[in-house]
Image (cartoon, rainbow, N blue to C red; front, side, top):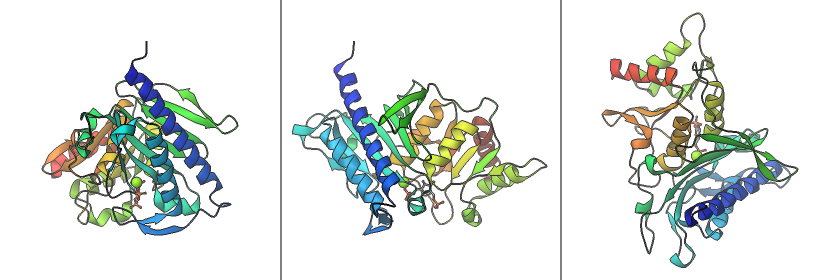
Length: 319
Ligand code: AHM
Ligand code: MG
């Protein structure tokens, strides 16, 4: 029998899937509806907002607020958390990046939405502390990829990773794959990172990428520049995705709450490894971080065990 929590979670998931469908439609029609280009504002981390960033953010905020299932929302596009008035609040808190991969929006390359769901711990007025928790506390993590097809990938913590593809003729996500896992042998030898930053990387990352490129059968380089697409390919084909810290960005580029945590949970649930590498003096499992600000960043190293272990061994060797 469904508990009231299960029922409320079903409503939340329906709201998330509706917001993903609406965002997919906006991306599909962007050229015709003149939705490419800048909105004229910057977001919380100082990035120029695109029209589609703003539209998708409105879609997610309105859909989640109106679902009546949420108490706190954190979006990449909002400087402050949104605390929902108790009369309309539910039991969940959602951190999301409504349209990740902003640099790819205007050239019609894949983008995605990333989200993580917590169950609130407060009673009465929710507070941002409901979301300043380790990634291990997430009860749902997911992403939606707006690519050649729109695909929703979700994990309900400890219940594996599931793939759903949007059938545009039905307007519904169809469940296509259960218990998605990384290829057992590590899969294809692919490394995925912005190598343009390599002169600022630390020695362990430099040495790892040199290792991947060495020998008679070097790894292939693949980098879309949209985390959702790069991580999706890494899970399905194998290999490693890195956005490490560097001399200019000591905490890396990607945000803990709505990029690092949800992707790390999906990767671990698919049998992979998610690490920050050597971060703040220790080899740091990504999901064990405890954020203290909503737009906090962390280094991200995700992939199959074969390749992430290699990077961690370079950290042990070189510091
Ligand atoms: P965004 O949230 O502003 O789109 O930034 C996140 C994106 C990730 O999707 C992607 O992996 C990374 O930034 C690419 O960064 P870069 O252009 O520095 O390679
Ligand atoms: Mg993003």
